Image 1 (spheres, rainbow, N blue to C red):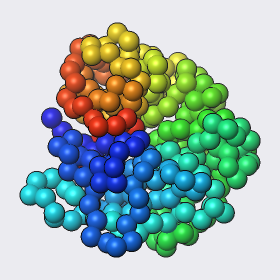
Image 2: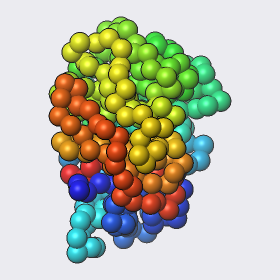
Image 3: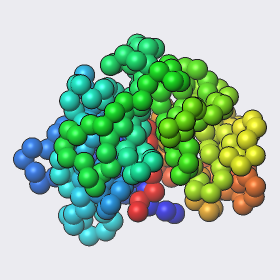
Length: 289
């Protein structure tokens, strides 16, 4: 079993981001923010960056490794940036490192559909993690295409993928060029790029589909949420290894895994097991570095 980290919608300040063996985020700093409504996270340059979606403005929390536990990796809070209302970081959902090392953050809003609105669905762009100072802001992408309910992001080195749950598409954004044709998927949410050829697309009610980046066309079903054993009540974050797919069940408060068979694309029988019951709704899951 691979080690992984999950973010939870709620929970206490010490258990919103935990390893599967319940090692939480830790802090020795006196200015530690409240960990609430945590969303996407990534590791870059040896540091952990986590989206905090609580309140009227969102923020990016930075953590560095520490040695408070005898096993695994714990993280020590360092600083917060991106929490200036003028930076359009409103209810952030996901983040990826994209072109030129810049950080792309998706902002979700179920009450706004105008992509040009400061509180709408936009993609916020920051300078790379290694160069950014707290609060530094570069630009905002909006309007083309107009997002309705922006959620997950993925980057394959050339294209930035952005799932729009409300429009039932995954947009394919280009650097300095018009977007490519969108991928039609029912209520896409979380995204996972396998590092070579396939984009896996999660839909809350349907499960996971797979899109062949090289061939294009229509995504095919990879894991059926209702037919899987155990069934998935609400598909949230997921990731694949050589042998398994790990899936966060948002409403089921559980992490499930299912065996994966190699192929083009990979397949699964959907016959797996629950490996972790969570204390709150899991949203994102990511393999530990």
